[in-house]
Image 1: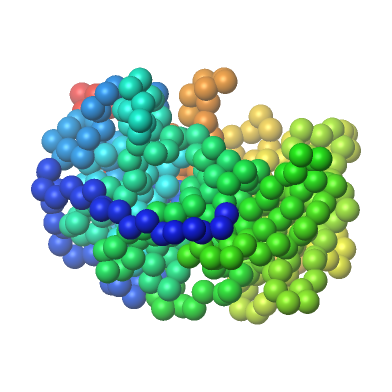
Image 2: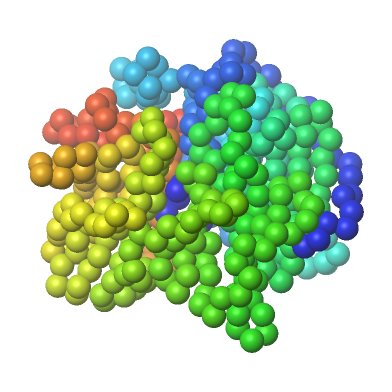
Length: 472
């Protein structure tokens, strides 16, 4: 999890909108094609020794017409653009004697950090989304929150607009790299569409399904070079609801083709959660289940306790554990259960449950990595973790002394953070500045080098400060 957000009649090949020049610049060096990608899908992604990231957070509702053009000289684009920086041998960004990050290079002169940031490295390209105010196809009124899907080579060459004027920030999307092709899956206006970008430069757009209630594709955060894709992960999964309130679950290959029925009729609501660990996770009547949906596959049930975010009794939060510990094993979920008097952290598996930790105030799960669970406690800014590999000796420890990933005020606030297994990223005001902008910060989850004056572990901003934020 990153961020705490039809029958194919014909395939229409369309011309790709390309933008060359316009302030583009080729960067020297860079990762190898064979390097592993970590952290696809958020505001920062790592390939080899290079970190690609959105410099600062921007409220797209403030964009006027013709703002956020692909312009290397634009101040807005410099502040909020997508940068590249090389990580040191410890996996973090180098700082000079004044604590300023060194070596950041502007790759994309457009807004990269916003409510639905999405950076993905697929092959030799960075795929990203960027917001703008403009005109939807066939409309004459200015619309705020339009979304472009774009790509650029990791060295800054070959900038291409893949979609413009079709979608807004209200859509849901994901980007997957399968068999050398990149698939952008978009859910908008009850339709699931795919933009397919091939390695030879061709692009095609087609509809997967309509009258869709919910959809899901693989959560593809890590990409290893030439690693085969499991069959389960080559599909788009989606639900529909009939006029008599019955739910059905279907899937269709990312390339389109025939629709397969996985659950034909259910009186209980089906909600798709994730495609992960080569399985499909879904809730049926708020009970979490999973299956590969391959021939004769079983359906796993982790607990019969309902998952309801705002409940006073039941599971109110959970994260699906990774199975990547060197062997194939369904490790279940870590979840927060409350009985209205306290909050309990449990590991639920198909074989039962294990109590891990208890707090008097609400536990808010942040992420899991290996056998560690990272979380916050209400009214406490610290980021904590516990290692549950030895349930008889679990101790809560502080990972970050201050972790605030919420931007904005009250109803307009947004919580945004990402991680790649080793690092956590979040937007915040930079220390020792005028605190004008929210910059992307990084911290290591283990052995963090960034400390405050008291020697406590904290995050540090990565990129370039705006001149208004530099104290004179």
